[in-house]
Image (cartoon, rainbow, N blue to C red; front, side, top):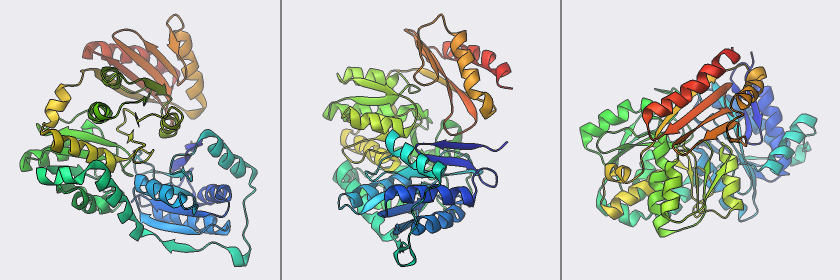
Length: 453
């Protein structure tokens, strides 16, 4: 069974099966045609398959007449920032980040970035897909083939801007220690520069950009053992876990509690919304903690479908001040409308420096919920029919069907939805009671499991 995920944000598949050089060539040619001959920035994570896909993208993009700024190993949020800054001078047509984010080493993807430095919106994404399906690619003549330039030296612009935005002047005197697990991914070569720009003491973990992940590249408590051990040994104020392209982050508090990735967004929002109020965007799978935080600051909350592109488009349409997901992704449009782990870490370190509070105290101030996240493998041909069966199963309840099926009451909720990145059905349940949250999830799983075989 060949697994391939095609959407407005890009294309994702398993290397050697569905994600092939030919597929990358065609999609990159479609994106180059969409860019209309303007420059395209290209970055990649450290997966051992990424150089292969880079070669395909370079050939395809230059064949459409696009000059390529090759950033090499580069976190997606840095690429997005550079696309956005280039576009201010009308120079960039967009970017491609070669990364499968939180997926394991077998997967890789082309993630498309629009000229504004954001994930493609629905119209832009559909345009790229139409070009791909029609096979009508822009073809440059011999004298107009694009050129390839090295853009690695441009990444310093990002860290200079980040230091100004988060207030490195507040962080430096606090002499904070932070343990960061880059999972040997795209952030690994940039950790020292990040720490120097913000002025904290870095204790790196898994910072060899060799493409071999020491654990699955999803920032969740189950992967935090190394960070917890090192944090205890050195007495650090915070620990952070990243995914392979530095778009998501989860947190370990100074008392060695590995926090659910659901805490990242409300921890940042609780401080930020004190100082700047406005609408907040979160997806339908994100903890109610963010609802309570937004309500306490008199800020409206807008719910969207899961996915960075949905969150960012809602962020822009609603003129919101924050967007995020329970996966650990946070976007702050005052800096850039993109999920950015460096920005998130910097803002949390700024909170610690400015307030003098410990992370554990900030966590105690948040409402406590218990969330259960499960996934059930399901053949792609059956996924949507299974979700339709779930709708019928819960038909007597009031349903939100804007992203799968979500059933909610006063104490909690359960959601069943198809994964956008893997051939799976995701079941997420939350309640103030851990037993009730588990019960909600198990009820859905018992119904789904026989149908998904």
